[in-house]
Amino acid sequence: MGKYQRFQIDQYPREIDAKVVRPSKGSTIEIANNEFFQEDHSVDLDINILFGAMMAAFGIYLFFGFDDELTFGWVLFILFLILFGLLWTLYGFTAKRNKKKLILDRLNGTITYPDNYWRKPLKGSFTDLKVIISVTGDVDGVSTTEYLKFVNTFKPRLINTIKTISYENPYQEWSLYVWYMDKNRPLPPGTAFDPYRQKDFERRKAEGFPKPLYPSTIPTPEATPEQQKERERIGGW
Image 1: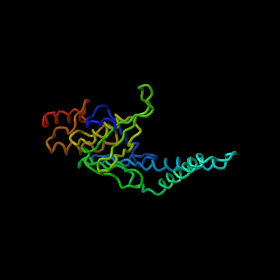
Image 2: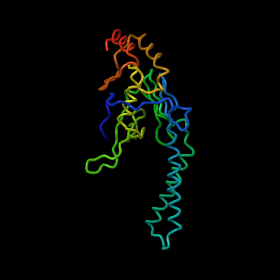
Image 3: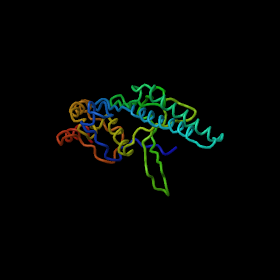
Image 4: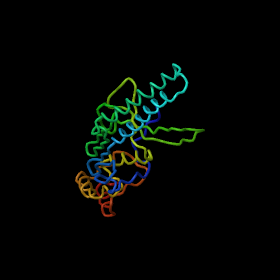
């Protein structure tokens, strides 16, 4: 298992633009406000259906396409392709899509994310989450693809399972999640959050602008210079 990521804002995060939030067509972001950030991950089920059907079809093609008599090894391989292809396709059609959501609860500090296959979503404290950035295609020390993955921590098992959460830049994505879940900082950059910045500012002001929950290596200023001066005067940071 790789090194767990720190709860720290290390990079300028992916900006959440208002035009990529539903009801925008084709968007996976369902909610982006001062209380919740919610993404629909049910597209993974469509991928399962596609690749499962392709695998099963390829197995059937091999079975009927061989000119020579099939060996026992080939029969087992083809059965494997067909059975697992059908299983993945069945999973894609039968899994409940409303359970395949990533939900960040900013004010309560909890996170909910999809478990594997038909299992119920996992939910717990954001600070208890274990996160890794995995590397695939590592050739001669040069990584080709990196993914943000969550390690199961909310439902103990004999063997830990991991869940791919984002195919975006994993460092920027993790910084986005940490920034958003630090309810003592202003909302992250992006026009999707603009309508909620004043309300979030007033909440933090009423609380006396408490210090940030997580460290940051980049500035996280308020939306306006006036708000920034008020935060510095009241909160001292």
